Every structure is written in C-alpha cells, then in structure tokens.
Image 1 (cartoon, one colour):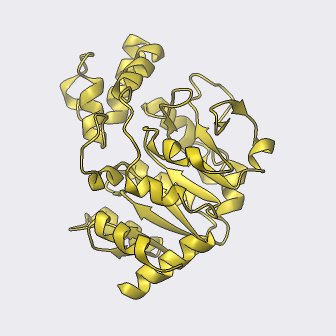
Image 2: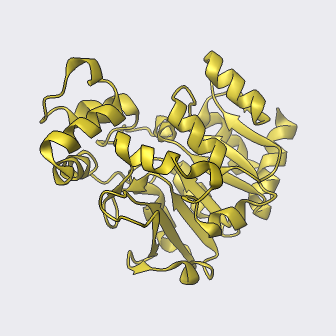
Length: 276
C-alpha cells in the first residue's frame, strides 16, 4: 500500500494524476457542512417544499424532473440554490489539491463551491461547468474565470489548472445537471464525447485518475466517470473503504481502477506527507 501511495503522490506532484472528487469527500470534515453531501440528502432537501409521488421521493433525478415539469425549471433551480446557499469552507482535502499548482485538471462532481474557494489563491486557474439544455439550448458547457466572469474555451487554454464541474455548480452562475431530462440530453451524445469539453479531453490524455469521495452504485455516476476518463491512461485508483456492490466491483475491474480500501482521511494524510 505504501508503494501505491508514493506512486500516486509522485504523480500528483508531477501533474500526471488527476483528482476526481465526489460528494463523499465531506466525510473527512470535522464539522458536517450545512449543504447536502449525497444523493439522498439532496433529494430530501428538494422535496421539503415540493410534494412528489412517494415512489420517486428517494430518486434524485426523477424527483427533480417532477419539480421541473409541474413547478417549472425556475423552481427547481431555486430549490437547488437553497440547498447550497450555506457556503461550507474548504476542508483539508480541497486545500491540498489547490496547493498543487502543477495539476492541469481537477474534476469535481458535486454542486458545492468549496474547491473553487480553495483555488482562490491559485495563481492561474479557471473552471468549466456543465449546463442544462433547458436553460442554455445548444450549449454543453460554460467557462468561468477565477473571478467568476463568463469567458470562452480559447481563454481556458491559458489556465494552468482547470476545474471541471460536469454536473454544474451553485457558483458562480447556478448551473445544474440534476433532472432526468438534463441527463437524457447528455447521455444521447456522451458516447461520442460531445458534452465533454475539448480542453478536458486534451488534458486527460495519457494521465491517471484518482477517485476520492466517489461511489459507483448509481449507473449515472458510472457512466459519467467512464466517459470523463475515456482515452486517458489504462491505470487509475479509487479510495473506497468497506464493502463494494456488485456493480462497483465490476466497474472497477472494467476500468482497471485499483481500490485502496482505507478511510479517505487516512489516504489524504499519507498523500500529503509523502516527500516531493
């Protein structure tokens, strides 16, 4: 295990290993954030103010679609904004990756803005976020400077570190990929990589991914991860403690993702103390 940690740490320092962060990174926080940190917590938040059929109350994308259909897209966005209105400060994990100025790419697959906050002191970074066709028809993504200003793909080529938010984010422009229709639009094109920004495709080439705070029990999570790391390296890692589902085991095997069965906090501690 020590050899693997050292290999990953060296790869991060060299910009060869790309962090892929999921909502589970908040498990390492000493104080739980006010915002939701998993699918079930988020759907519970969305349905606090909107009645949805009982059979979909625990299904995030279906409940979001119901709210969008019967209450309007603006209502769904407003409820997502409300769910993430309380800004959680970056935790050690965010600060660690923000300190690695040689990282060409960081993937953050949740809706809070802690990683963005942590990058505030980075000398040269920007982000690209997935956007909903319901609000930005004909666009798959939007680019934002470190100051939160809308920009374009050409400007993004100059950024040393790119933060990729495939599901959007609560900041700076409240872009959310969350309803069934949001995902259907993307899934019709994702096999040919159209929704994946060209700059992400460029920067992932030949590189390894390190999954942190990610579980792959949900099919959509597996599809997005599979497509985002497509045509990268053939070797990756995931820190996942405890028992895996059959789907997770199969997914890790298919993508040659080596699992580190250990607490995320312990993995982070070991990565951060490995000499550069």
